[in-house]
Image 1 (cartoon, one colour):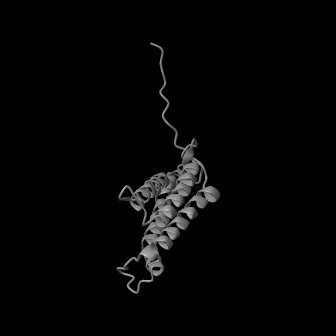
Image 2 (cartoon, one colour):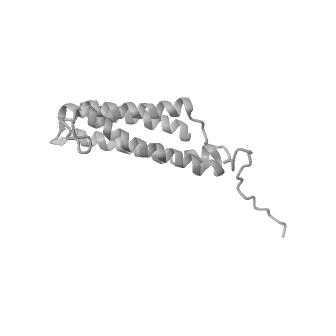
Amino acid sequence: MGRRGLGVLFGLVSVVFLASAGYFNAVLVGGFPLFILLTAASAFFVEGGFSNLAPYTVEQYGVRLGSRSSGLGQAANGVGKIVGPLVLALIAGSSNIIAPKATAAAVFPAFVFLGVLMLGVALAYLFLGVETHGREMALGPEEMVVRAPVLETRPS
């Protein structure tokens, strides 16, 4: 399937589970909160998508630029870990952005926000992603490639 197709799929499935978790946040199924099941399912696809993304930068930009591209991706991840909770605090209408208290009314908009972010991930894979599956990994921009060693057989 490749990293690009899997990224699109995991992003779109995450949108469905996140929006569903927000919408059905108060529903019980057999006395068990449906919210827990939908949140766990969304976590599976969000985290699975991240495990698909982690090696993608090195595969895309080659061995020499891979550490820089991976570092840039982690920097963006760090910014998201700061900005994301701030936006969620604004959605919740909390005056305390350090430890916002979530209200029941803020659950659905917060999960829709998270779903929109995952939709952005799916669209980025769809429109910006380059498939790396089946390609040889380049060492750098000079198009040198890493090849698997070939074992030679000698007649006995």
